[in-house]
Length: 114
Image 1 (tube, rainbow, N blue to C red):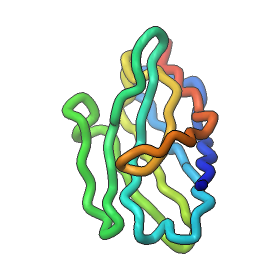
Image 2 (cartoon, rainbow, N blue to C red; image 1 turned 180 degrees about the horizontal axis):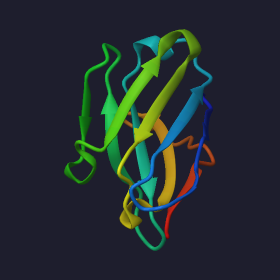
Image 3 (cartoon, one colour; image 1 turned 90 degrees about the horizontal axis):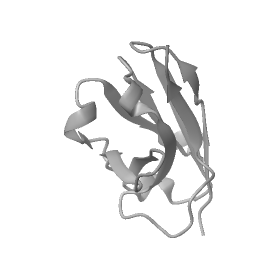
C-alpha cells in the first residue's frame, strides 16, 4: 500500500502563494494518475485537481487559473503550486491517486488569512 507524505503548507495572506509537495512511496508512481484533494473545516473532502501519468491536468472551477499541478516521476513526487490564494482555500490538503485509495496521508494545513 502506498504512503503519501504531504508538506509545504502554512499561513499565508490573501493573494499569496504556496507550493505543496507530496512524496509517494510507490515504485510504480510513474504509471499512476495522481490528484490533490482538500478538506475545509466542517466540510467533506473534495477533489482539487489531477494529473495523469502523461502530465495532462484538470482542475475544479474554483481553482482554475490559480493552481498548477505538476509531477516529478524521478522523485515520485507530485506538486501543487497555489497562487492568488483566497480565504476559501483554507483547508487540509492531501494527495492520493486520481481514484483515491483508502490510505490517506496526514495532509498539510493551508491557512489563508490576513
